[in-house]
Image (cartoon, rainbow, N blue to C red; front, side):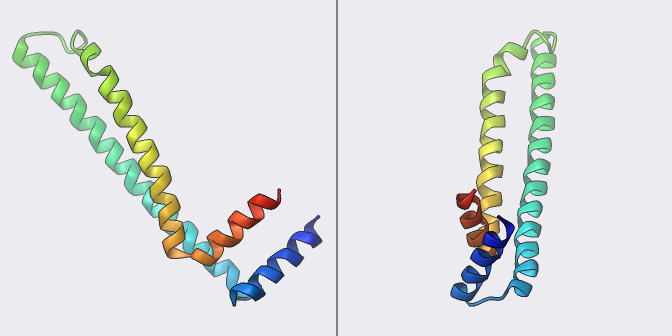
Length: 115
């Protein structure tokens, strides 16, 4: 099985105009870009959660209500926000990988189709 994968990767590298020794730095460049975007998305999500918690607390203080009594109003928007950040993170990391290293992403996608 591994000899078939090596043969396919060598054939792909030849058709894409690269070599197997160039592929490792290409894969690293793609992974670095994806990880940077993941970190940025995580930081944005953390800031969003902190801001939302602060807004809930301030609204509860202004209305004279307990913070936990107000929580039900923010459940559905919070879930939608979390899903949005999740989808954004997935798509942004994939985009970053394609921008940074299209050769490596192409080879990775073709290798995943072989499995």
